[in-house]
Length: 331
Ligand code: COA
Image (tube, rainbow, N blue to C red; front, side):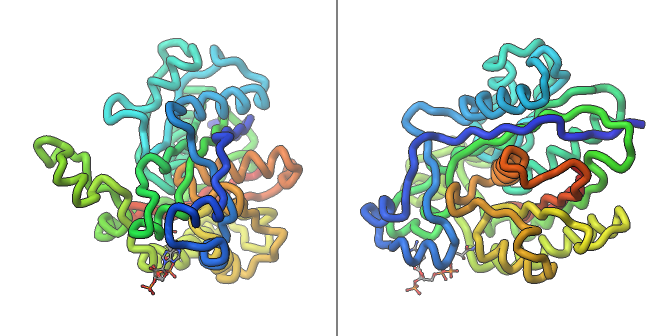
């Protein structure tokens, strides 16, 4: 039975660069505070009118080109985002239309930071059924339009950012190549620790002036609590996925950790006793792009020569939900 392998990768980020100094002109913060606490130097934010689907389309076309495939070769689309262009329908169908794909299925998933890992697992399962051969998986987010750029909201405004990454997957017969194992979890008791309350169908109307006055439409985060759980759950999950394939951290060529905060990545690296060359981070240039962080890392590593055929790579993510997980992949 064939399982899934990544055939091509691509990324697309807005051309608008927002530096820490830019932010310090709009709120009480400093480049020094942001760099020391988060490792972020700059991030990308969309310009007015630029959409998540625009970025996803550009990333997808690059991934298809690397895979040597055409849009018409795709059998389905999975779109991971917690910040869709609209409430309904999801971004998947808008991407299907923008790419000019046939009437292939387009599925949206909303796992936020771990959305890309969950998406890989779904893609793998779809390919294993034999129902689908070539799938496009996108992780894309526009967080900048959901934030208030103010001193009151500075703990989120300096972290979150916009970007998109895509992969094309296809069937692989070699059991030791491609996506080898997954470890997925959720823990809803922490749902309100990192969330957007409104709009929501439990309210009538779904969003009101009162919600906006109370800032319930903005991303709300208990940063310390998220940090505490992230630094234990990600190492735990990496170990779990390695155990499933009978490997250890010594076998790992590369760990791609969700880019939430460089301090979190460094603590994950220490907990797993990994050498610097075994971990790749790019949060300094992109900030936290939620579901897009892993495909952004992956594309830079593939195009930058950091990943070679035969390398064992583990990708791990933790975020809103809480929801977290890892995938082990032989490149
Ligand atoms: N610039 C300057 N000062 C800031 C600031 C900013 N951007 N953001 C917060 N502060 C201030 C706070 O107001 C507080 O001041 P006070 O002590 O006078 O009250 C002080 O810095 C410490 O704030 P705190 O929120 O306790 O900081 P922290 O050390 O926990 O760092 C985060 C804040 C957000 C960087 C950190 O908690 C974090 O990264 N958490 C994980 C978040 C995350 O990964 N989220 C996404 C998961 S997918």
